[in-house]
Length: 200
Image (cartoon, rainbow, N blue to C red; front, side):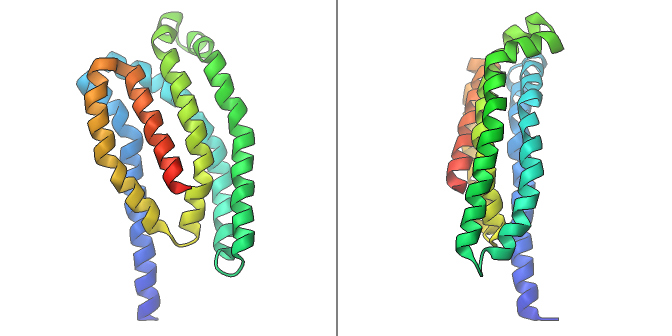
């Protein structure tokens, strides 16, 4: 056993743990804010749209775990190759996620009307369109997030997530009572876009 290696392992693992604890809070606090500050019905409209939009995470969930070890293996010894892998991963996400996001923006109302009801779609369609855009932008940003963590820069991702908690919560508190599900969707999209930008 090496004390220095153990220290490095605990440091990296600690930052990964921080990121993995804070990220779920960021992902769920919008629905809690709607339920607490507006109504359970508003949270329901938003949650249905959210569930449809987050299906794009199936793509990032398939690609990023494959990208992670490839970048980790090359980040130090072959940084140019690691950079090429990140670019290729981002392009793949862009190509696959863009049509899905466009379809949700264009046909979201019809999807919600068929899946739930036309009345429900009238309240949830705007949220779905906004969230689809946010998931697209953030989905492409997952390539950068994966690259940072694979290259041993988990501290950067953890601090970025920690820095988002208070501004996001304050924005939700200000926007939710006034603008309801659509306002919360807009705040969520802004956070997802900022997150992706910071990761890049």
